[in-house]
Length: 256
Image (cartoon, rainbow, N blue to C red):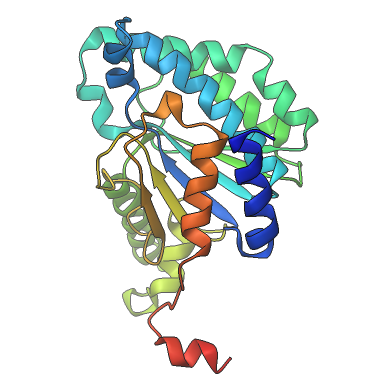
């Protein structure tokens, strides 16, 4: 048995019923991986796309219900134009391939969150096609955050609620946490239990700010293209060893 197989076996034996329902991932380190391997910048993103595909398969095997991937942030538009164009071409290529049909055959639902104002029409159409094709699937959900930012998300939710106040549908006093949850992206899904960030940085980078209220975080120095099943199991082992208190104290949880 290989080390990776032993790791998976131990994880399944010790933590099968404690795995997170919803995992969010900040996929960082693609460019540094490229430099480390003396390759051009986009090669790291291509390798990262393969890693994302493999992670979806791993989550499916482990019965993880939801996987949210931070593919492209609102701030990524500020990167060099050549890199942005390459990223858009890669995104388009992935959606044009049979990747979506493969996910569909596995009963996986695809959802996109983020602003869609800046994407090309062809890309928007492919995103819409992927969502419509998989919308009735009842298995795992893969959420793709593209042109997404936590500030944008909260601002958009506030704008929608203010619109309801202006129309007379509600009054300002009606707005509470539950209503914000209704308007926030993926507010209908369980909030992330675990966020994994690769690449060595320890920040959330404007990702899912509202949704991360009680999320556990796992940071690794591993660059995203190198984040394999063994690295994933390390993150899960770390997660299941934590006690999630949600504001309570340990004694309260032990009392049941």
